[in-house]
Image 1 (cartoon, rainbow, N blue to C red):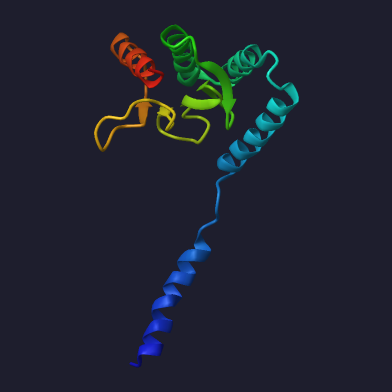
Image 2 (cartoon, one colour):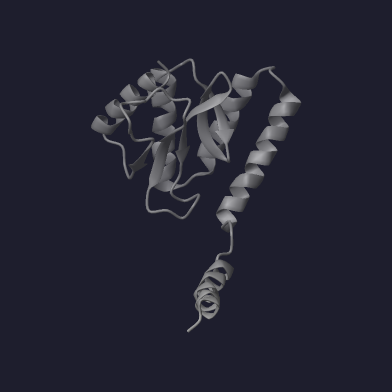
Amino acid sequence: MSTAKATRESTKGTKAAATKTTGFTDEERAAMQERARELKAEARRGSRAAKADGERDVLAKIAEMQGTDRAIAERLHAIVKESAPALSPKTWYGMPAYAKDGKVVCFFQSAQKFNARYATLGFNDAANLDEGAMWPTSFALKELTDAEEAKIGVLVKRAVS
């Protein structure tokens, strides 16, 4: 078999695999649309009452959640407010998030939002969690016990230090 023919045959599988991907899921597209709406709303509001508006938006998103996601989100909101009162609540891609100087430090992603097995507490690069050359930036949450709540409180405090 010639090299050219072998190359054509080997790329056939690549083309087929490339056409099978559909891009973003419906949930991801909805999150991006929510983020665009959030940015427009932030621009309209300006800096006036941003923290109060953010708190209202986060509480509204939490109220939309169901079951375990809602219970975890409510508790996380209280932990973040208690552990790091300097963080400003806001929505980010339709999720409850907490920012410092306009940059999202941490966020809660419900399991329901992306049809996942578990909810996630995530930290962005604005979080001061650096530990050596590698450290975790997100944590799976299936439930919150006192032990997990204490760990989250420590993480959030460290993230804003």
